Every structure is written in C-alpha cells, then in structure tokens.
Length: 194
Image (cartoon, rainbow, N blue to C red):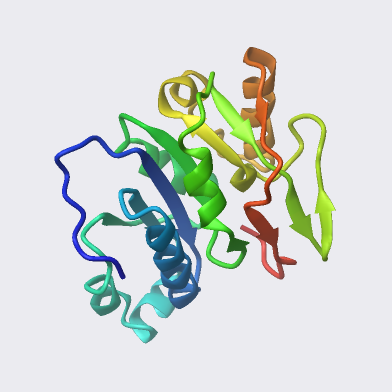
C-alpha cells in the first residue's frame, strides 16, 4: 500500500468500493487503485455477513488499510445502500465506483482524471474477452467517472434492482457524456447477486 498521502490539497478523486464476503479481493483492488492514483481517497463499504466478518477477522484486517481509506460497515447487503452511505462522506472532486471482484486498469482512471468534464465520462469495457462499447445508459456503473457536483444532482441511488441504470439514465438525460476510448473495466462473470 502507498504511504500516507498528505491532505493539503482537495482529493482529486474518491473511489467507492463495495465488498461482500470478498475482503481480500477488495484490498487487492484498493491497492491497485492507490498505486495508480496515490492522491486518491477510498471509501470501502463492507456489506459482508456477520459470520464472514468474524471468521475472516475483518476488524483486524481494517487496520491494514492505508490512511487515505475509510472503512464503513453496512448492516444491509445492498450495493445501492452502500453507495448512498459512502456518498454522504464525499463533497468534492471526481467519483468512481469499484467492485471487489472485477479487474480495473487504474492507470486509465488516472489519465482520465485530468480531462475537462461537463458532468461525467464513460469508457468501454471488456466482458468475456470482448470489448463492449454500449450506446446509452445501459452499461456498468464502474465504467463511469463523475464530477461530484453533477453526481449530487442525480442522487440518491434508489434501493431497488437496476438503480444504477436508473441513475445513469438520469445522467444521460441531463448531460452529454464524454466518451473515452480506453478500457478501465474488465468485467468478471458474477456468480452472486449484489
């Protein structure tokens, strides 16, 4: 993990990670993010079951998180509830959403943070070895970079299935999107319902 990052400047980006019973995988993705974006902030929301938290000694593992990472324990296994919890702690910069089991090229994230955004940007993604370039809002949330001031206009996430696409639909209806060409997300097949 990177050393302590000074807080003399505003955070340029906050990455919101949500994990469910995959804490070690989340830690690896956090490490990759902070290696590429050492001036970033991470909020890790743990939706894990209480049995998993006890068995895996999550409380002890939280101590290994870098100083630019804030840990939030959620009492609900709901990704959208977790996002809303984390977003209450954000008031500036850019926002990205991350999972615990996909793979991200965070060097691309770092490069895209310097573009002039009018709201948000999207990127293509790879799924099952094939590049995907969706047209419109039906895409993984993790392929987007949001400006906080824009994102707060379309929040909160509704606590229902498809809330990410509902939020993206509002975003696409409000603002033209900057479409980047480089891939950030290499999506895994999910064997669980989040």
